[in-house]
Length: 454
Image (cartoon, rainbow, N blue to C red):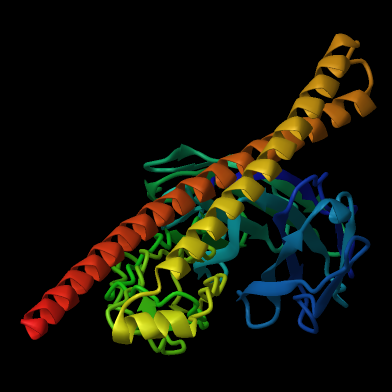
């Protein structure tokens, strides 16, 4: 995020104590920097700040006690927004020898002055200080306080960066006169030695760097997937398998990320639990492949500090409908067939039952078809009318939904008919096999009887 200079204002009037400064017009979230210079053996720096805006706490970031309490320049900062626009900031400062003040508002900054360097009182005629090497997108700022005279400062420049811009200047004639000015430039690299011009006089100087707010680093959580494997199980007719809830555990090591480091995700594990299914011999259940998605919010890690990203325990739930298979009673006749053979009429009864089921489904299908035709007719009537009201549009949508439902149901019925027909074919084949078996057994019995009579 780039730093923008929203505006700066000089202090108000010619105070000797409790100086004030009015903040510039603010329309967005930003940081306000208020500077105060004073010369007094009792209190050369403010003890606290208050304002007519949001009046949250101002923090003193820099305190340059340049002359052992007799001269002091301090810089205070806090976050500001539109509620602070045009607010008056007052410094509690029982000074009697004159004060000067000023304020600047920057958006997109970190809100913290870095590489701060203060000076002792510079002798009259000394109008130069060493500069700083500024980080990418940062501002170089310099505050010059004339402690004895309201001297104007001009021509502030760096050997490498060139001319600086004056942000504000407060020349106060209160008490023993004083002046406070702030100059700055947005520059990447070494600004070089700083020089300026003024009427000779003792000064106190502060230089500092203001960097942009960190844009952070993003860790994106990719989607994961897993496959459930196992042996297909074919259930006996009329058995039920209940799908129990499953769970899994994602494990890993908490990551302490430094700038430019790599986060390596350890392998995770999960456990699927449920109820065992007691299967009849020779039957199989087909286990479909499953999938899950791990979602979350991207982690925005701030550069310059140590933040910990903790991999918490995750959980998921496998849900579904229990498979309830239709049960056909196992009669004593079938039991007798398994032991002694015979029972052709039972298979015939099943075939008749399945044909009855087909006729029932076909009747329902015809009813659905008629309902669909009626819906189509109503839809045609509606389409013949002008579609001018929301009521007609909603009725049409509902009718179309009903048509889709009927079509889906008839397709499902057609699938059921095909399945039953397949079962009929299997039953007829079984009947033929049983008849062939019975005929063979009768012939064998006949041969045995003939052999016995001979």
